[in-house]
Image (cartoon, rainbow, N blue to C red; front, top):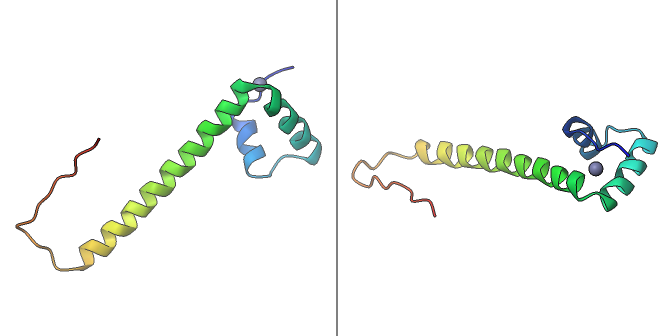
Length: 78
Ligand SMILES: [Zn+2]
């Protein structure tokens, strides 16, 4: 059986697939690691966008308060 494309998995995720399509997609995902992984990646991308949106909100909140010029901390990643 053919694998699902990213676009098709997007449709599946957003419930925009036909009922039949969704059922066969579901059963395919149970057997196919490759497509299941792709679906996971799509979810991660979503989470990343959500986190970005959150940090923008936090930034807006912070910038509303008067700035404190002497505490200029840079964030370390790790
Ligand atoms: Zn597959």
